[in-house]
Length: 70
Image 1 (cartoon, rainbow, N blue to C red):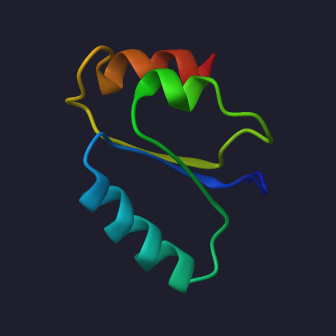
Image 2: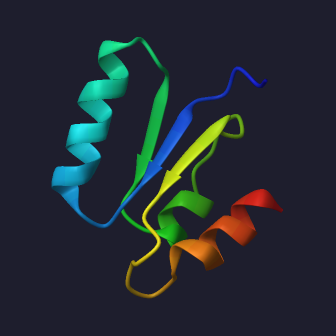
């Protein structure tokens, strides 16, 4: 498994905060994005895990997942 971060992608700031706090408490490296477009534009190592909201405006989670996997 990669040493990359866990990527949190959700348009709801409360959900991102909740996930960030729970995962950071466990010592996981994290990245986060508000939507699929922002997730795709992040620099750095590829994520080892993606926590992705499926229902987001502009780009669905499934569309973002297909592009993230590429």
